[in-house]
Length: 141
Image (cartoon, rainbow, N blue to C red; front, top):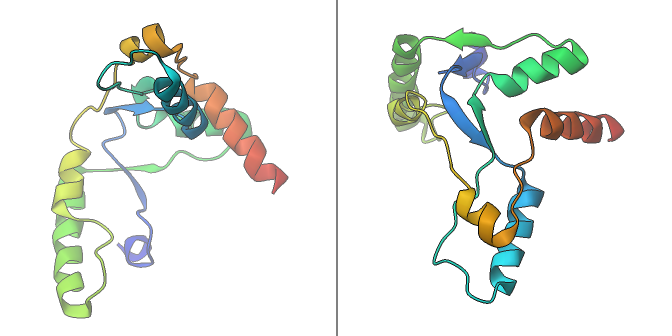
């Protein structure tokens, strides 16, 4: 809890849940293509590779030797969320975690981008490629 109250979560909640990792440049380019499309669909899902939430951290470990984050159990995360909401009521500050946020981490969040791929040429960048590019960008700074 000390890490948490310092302002960061000390690990991952629901690391095995499936998330869709899309890269902002790819999503922005798809928006432009949708605006330029002769007859676009009313809406497109623009997701990325659907992988477990832990996967980007595994890739970082493979590339840089970083440690994987701890896995936080739902029961502990929910407890911390309730404590954070109580703390926020007393201090007037935003909670770092809420029970509602923990509930989000209990579910898979895959996104299918087949319509965007067909109509807009949207290409899903692999998570490994995006993580490697992000690490390289951070190292240049």
